[in-house]
Image 1: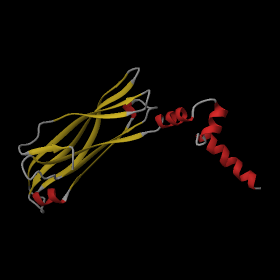
Image 2: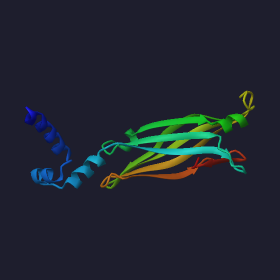
Image 3: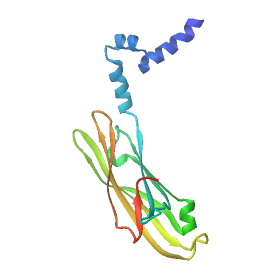
Image 4: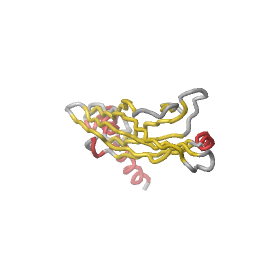
Amino acid sequence: MRLRSIAPLLAAVTCLGLTAGTASAVSGSDTGTRVAKAAKGACEAKHVKRYPGTALPPYWRWGEADFSVTVCPSQDASAWALAARAETNRVGAANGHLVGSPKLRALKTDEDARTKSALYGGSLVLKVCTPYVEWPCYSTSRITSYFTVTLTKATGAVQVRPEFHTPLPLGTALYETP
């Protein structure tokens, strides 16, 4: 009875490549190669975070925008899943700077023999309003940050490269660190 319950478990472990000696001998391939191929096929979420804030001391951050691209090696770059989130922190609310309305869209996709890549534009709306009351608002501006996500087909490595952003309102900076 005990051997019957261990056999399926041993077969599952061998198929997953978790036993080095047995799996290599049976399949005739290296376990490390098989694990690398399995990892290469997995989807990976990459986040690009931007923090709008003051350009002058004390360099406050008013909130956070999080742009997420889920990179799947088996899909075209145009089919990668996109998500965008933005929120105002307490400093932003106390100073009347509200961060919201995030959007993320693919502007250009490309594929060659070695890589798949896409250029993205992540945008957010920055409103300057009366602190705490959040009304009336004095100015509204849309800030767009551009970045490229590249997948290397051979290794499955994903790289994110920031490109540029649209001009910012006077006294505003767009930070990459919180």
